Length: 123
Image (tube, rainbow, N blue to C red; front, side):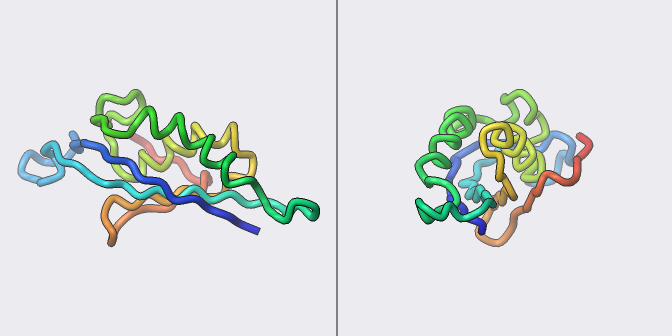
């Protein structure tokens, strides 16, 4: 069984490795929508995989570190693509959510990425 919670982050960023004329090379903002998916067995007594309150509690340090900040100023996000953001979130949630299955980051309603912890991205 797999459950998920959706969260939002309001962040500024620029992508420093793009050519100067590219719009994303300039400072801009996003309302990121992040889904955190956890997979595990259904607890026969409680009837759930994980208490959503536990998932939300695990998210709080992520929110505190990123919301209303310039992502480029966060250690590990100097080139804050959605892909790097998904990996950054994964690395922090994996130790506290043993059943972490996937992180979905949407930077617009129509575009985003899915990270399952299986591949690495070279920065």
